[in-house]
Image 1 (cartoon, rainbow, N blue to C red):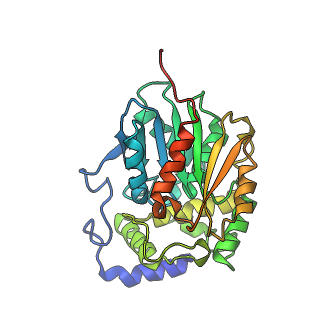
Image 2: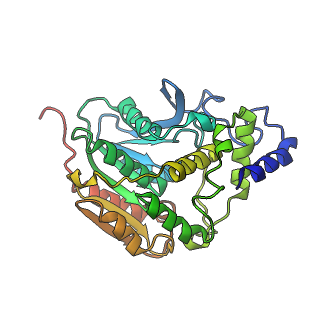
Image 3: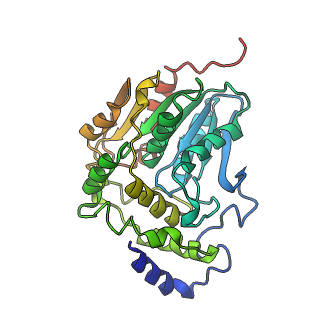
Length: 328
């Protein structure tokens, strides 16, 4: 949605006064102190740790950008029963986390946010970490590893489910398959006025509400219309701003993956036409060692629509990793 179109739409729903928190969309952690939260120096995230905090940490990373972790909770709960400490959280400006204006985002921020979340839940400097990411979350995990490697030996592996791209060129190609005629580098994601706009909490609520009611299933992804994945609240500003920065600045998150010492697991949905097998093979080729598992009869929402299979494959992969730590 272009800036002008979004502004008009915001005015249209002005009669739904968002001045009272929770009127249009659920409250964030800034408005509801009862929500589980992760406090950082400049923000607060909606998130928590399930399971054993002294076990290896599995850090789950949801899609988007701008979505939330609600649809990943069934998988998180099953993995928490295995003795892991499973971290679930809504990324900056997403889900029920604190909202930020477009100008508050910068390109290095997401990786640092993820690092701080890891440290927030770490009980020891050597505690092993494994990423389990879906869609944007799989890209996010890759971005972190490209910047930090195995993080001093702590990151022992990654489950990457349906990542979209590792480079600007790959993302433009992927968006072409996903959206058809959308111009990835056009006004839709590259409006500088949008990036500098200051917004009230009510503006954020309106934007998030509109994003939710205008969202449509994309045919190429083959998402089951009778089994939609649940969410609390989307972060419209986080979505538009991060995609806009990617378009404007460019990126390549494959430059230093060749140093990662462990095999990574790709879990893909068989039916997703926007991410066909050749596309996932191209991304997997950026890693020294990667294995692709295709889950039959499902599209992009494999983590929600095929929870048991997703957990089974993840458990099998985790069993191959060295997750020992501490003094024998």
